Amino acid sequence: VDRRYAHYCEQMQQLVHSFDSVLGIGSAMPYTCLAQKAMSRHFRCLRDAIADQLKITSELLGDKDSGGIAGITKGETPRLRLLEQSLRQQRAFHQMGMMEQEPWRPQRGLPERSVSILRAWLFEHFLHPYVHPPPPFCFHTYYALERGRSRRPVADPFL
Image (cartoon, rainbow, N blue to C red; front, side, top):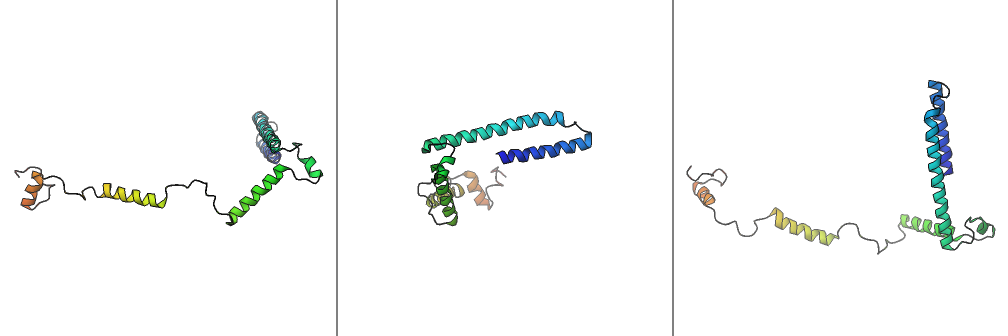
């Protein structure tokens, strides 16, 4: 976070210099002053939130000092660092394909068998609606067949 904040400050200084070169010295001050204050407040809140979260996590893991530096000087590795290393190893093994996918993870979408059953049912009921016996007898259909026409042009039986 501190590196990003320093990078942001450098970019802001470049912006101020470009404004000053075009519009004169001090012309960017009213615009950039409020932006710098707001962004420094955002970066500070973000840094404090991350530090608090690390402190809480290390306390939950049972580290004696939340700084983590004391454990390193004793020749011990803090539990938080061990946890991070194991997570990185698992991620690396998973990316290499060494680990099988966990069976507890939910499957995305429907299983193939369910999809094929659903597809067959939809095909039967919506694409072939008259697979069963034809619709009931209709005078217009009979009249059209008698005259050698399809049912569409025969709207009036007296034609």
